[in-house]
Length: 123
Image (cartoon, rainbow, N blue to C red):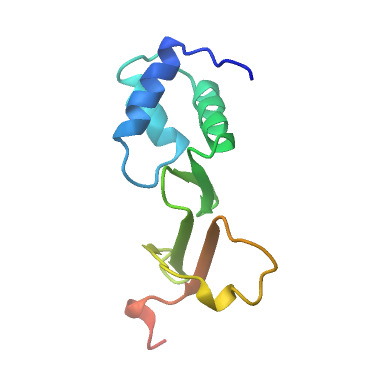
């Protein structure tokens, strides 16, 4: 087993990651850590995020063509209004309806639903 080196930058990144309680992207994490250490660059952020994802400490999803991360949500669902571009996140608690359709165990999922929000439902 390879022992990971804990650097000052990784400590800062981990402390800021521990404070985040919702979905976030790399740019948001970069802004947070740059308030503490402006020398931390975007490449360091992505290495840190990729490392945490490989170790199953983070989950990544695509949202509006961007990658978002979560520490505990193993699913990401959103509705996109095709008229306004508004994105509304929602949760699905159970995928029981898929149990007989998938030949395996579901680890995580992402669902994107497109349509028109209530502002445009009569159109």
